[in-house]
View 1 (spheres, rainbow, N blue to C red):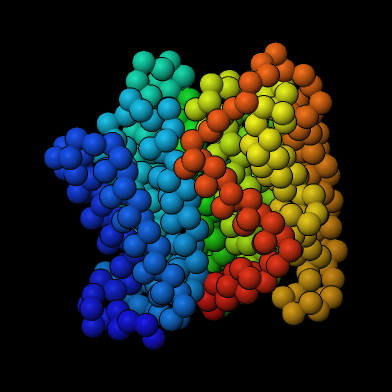
View 2 (spheres, rainbow, N blue to C red):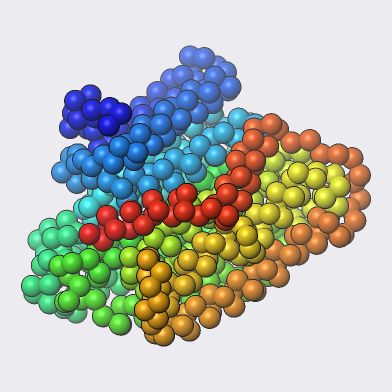
Amino acid sequence: MLLDYNAIFGDFSAIVPMLFLMAASLILPGVHLVGKRRTATWGFALAMVVVSMAFNAMMLYDGFVGTSLGMVTYNAYSGLMILLFQIVLFLAVLVSNASVETTRFNVGAYYALICAAATGMMFVAESSDLLMIFVGVELTSISSYALVSMKRNDARSAEAAVKYVIIGGMSTALTLYGISMLYGLAGTTNIAAIAETTRIGGVTFLFGVAMVSMIAGYGFKIAAVPFHMWAPDVYEGAATPVSLFLATGSKKMGLSVFFQIFLILFVSGTACAAIAGPEVQYLFAIIAAVTMTVGNIVAIAQSNIKRMLAYSSIAQAGYILIVMAVMSEYALSAGLFHMFTHVFMKGGAFLVVGALICAGVGEKISDYRGLGKRAPLMAAAMMLFLFSLAGIPPLAGFTSKFFLFSSTLGVGAAGDLAVNSQWVWLAFIAILNSAISLYYYARVVKAMYVDRGEAVEKIKVPKAFTFAIVICIVAVIVLGVYPQLLFDLCETAAHTLLL
């Protein structure tokens, strides 16, 4: 073991990665007030993110397991999810100082809010109690509302923030209703205890109402159909680093909530015999199929690149919801792996969009005409990310989709072919949707490499964006060719959660 975390941090050892970001959130406004320099504030925020990542990496490497506050537990699953949120935060913070969209922000407040939002995500990843999950989700949500509205004098940002707040309020109300009903039925908000109580007492009508309310409430967070209407407006109206953060981080938090609540209730040990039934699985399967289909079909009609990526994110959420239909350990491993690859694919695409906005390129797909000659690296990177999202081999998107879709056939983690034909139809719909997505991704590639643009001058983008994009390129290629680098950790995390 590299460090004795309990000796150093005591009762707070399980929340060490969050402690640094909580401190950053509290200190950053003061740092900017005293220093009056944007770069110094950015440097301090980035340094705190890196320190938090370093401690989490060491804890994962050491196999640390610990509990704090009686409601949060650090283990292989929570550590891996925290790492995902830290990567998202690192990419967003890295480029924020170079983005022209954030130049008019109060940077002290901006970095404090984005660190607070990430802290909420990390608390969600460690939570074993419905109330702690709710608090973490709301910390992230309220911070996100403010982040979306920070583009002053921008009508799109104001409209997006209002829609986000209203729909977020509906989500909160539904979630609280479901939690209160579960508490009334079980007398506790601990997820494992609720599962045990349900196993003993059986499923009731009120339990079903509570589950539907919570599925709807958290369905807003992942933009699952029909709760998806906020995502395109928010991603278009927000500054691109914020759009990146929400598309790759906030949705993963929502999916983590689905895993931590519903998989534990319906799959793991004590509750399995009582309440895991095909009706629940088919409900999630239908939501997954409709979400991926609506996301991909509506994306075809989009002319704004950020709105297209938003609907693409909705479709990707549909793919990951396959985990909730299959409800197996291997499916969860594949879902976690796809969540990581999606961070680099979708995050990379938003980084390219943000870099081009800094260079004066518009957000419409038609503005990308001739980009292959004007910005060869940006065009090549965007093509790589889009093809990976579509599932073109040997990129990471193909590998993660292969794992995820194959889980519908009952293929085990050890490669045993215990084929189950129950979810073949869901795999077929997912594969068909991947083919549909290639059409609108190819439109962007065609604009960059086939269509001629009016401008001929070379485009220069900020170095921070270039560095972040290169990180995503390397990850997309390496994880596609050598998935075991990360998939083994995903298997361990899945086993830990469902133990």
